[in-house]
Image (cartoon, rainbow, N blue to C red; front, side, top):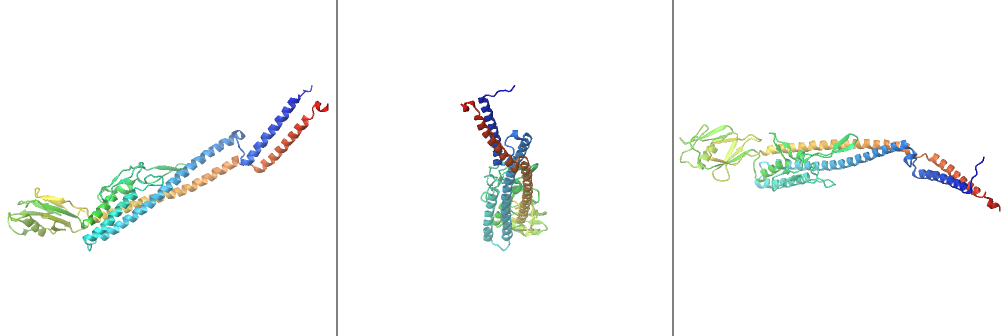
Length: 408
């Protein structure tokens, strides 16, 4: 028995067929327009999962590249800053060697010291350099805190940052630090005795020595309050000088002083007696004795007061200026080490950048294989679907003309 189709059902079937053909045609048209084979997960569930994983890999890679660019900018700025620090330190060293020349007058030394103080303030400014984001380069994790405080006027310098160093992911399982803490670069410089000293304190000491026309060797200023009593001593560089009221003149290392003598008499005889690796002159005021080492370097001058309080140390043994020059060389060595670290990190970033670019190319190639459309096949399919749609439309028109009412 043949089922009978109503006119309305026949029309609905025709319309549904046309709509299906239009939907398929529109989908193919959209694929051709976008050049993509997969427009929805249902088109290829397995391929869609792969594309999602690849998209996440590209997102991570984009973040790696952002971190890499950030680290490169900070390291490049730090390297430029370290070059400026090096230039200033080298200039300070030249000034120090020039200034401590014995042919210079006190006025000449003050002129040299003036530029050294200016260089010192410039170094403080360089230590407080900011990056493009407004963060301080050498403050550690305290990026918004000025790391170094102090100036040539105060002579007191302190580090306000911390020891933190930021690590940035620039690749899968690859991290790079974006700088160095200021304490490492500028402050923790060991002198010959193993004590920490900042390069700012070293420069300030050098400039102050020149400004006050202090000799390059060690010196100490002693003030005598009274004539030392019989038997009291002063030891200079291991030699004992004894005050004796028993007679006049110098006997060995004993300085004979009459009981009626004045302080200046005692100092005159003491200056005559002391001749062991130290020169002795009158101080800047009455009753003062200036001890100056005749040998460059630290540890070349020593004295011990055996007078029971008659001597006041007005100025303790100074740090020899040549030791400060050695400390400048230590600072230059530290900056060189830091620049070597920066250069190594920049090389790593360049290498990692190439690796990331190759990785991106591989991911994009895989993406293309999964989702890109075979254009020739799609256009052929489009033409076939278009012909099918046209045929369905024409058939629908012909079927509509088969009504009995058209025969009346």
